[in-house]
Every structure is written in structure tokens, then in C-alpha cells.
Length: 85
Image (cartoon, one colour):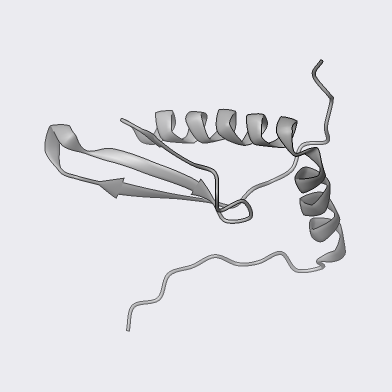
């Protein structure tokens, strides 16, 4: 049975690994760090992460609820950036 959920926005990180024909992309979600996947392209990594997160939320639906409640409480969502020192 599939449950219908409100859509939520998840912050993701995609990192290239390797070079040339061995290059792959690792993808993970900041809010759910234990869900990680890979793809040969950016699009494939993102799609696989979407599938992995949907499966994760089917198994642990309370995590999705926690994220929604956190987002609703925050007036200013987190800003993700990079800094070089």
C-alpha cells in the first residue's frame, strides 16, 4: 500500500568521485545522512537518491513527519554554501 504524502524539499549533496570513464557521483541528503547512493551521471545519482529516500520514508514514515514539522517551525530555512580558507 502506498501512502500519499505532502511533498517536502530535501537538501542534497552530490560529490564527483574518480576521473574519466571511472567517474561516478555519490549522492546523499543532509537531513537523512544514512541514505547514500551513486550514479554514473548527476541525473542518475539524483534519481537514485529520490528512489532511495522514498523507500526509506516508506519504512520509517515518522522521519518524514519530523522533517515536515522542522520545516514548518523554521522561519528561515538553512542556507547551504561553501567557504574556502
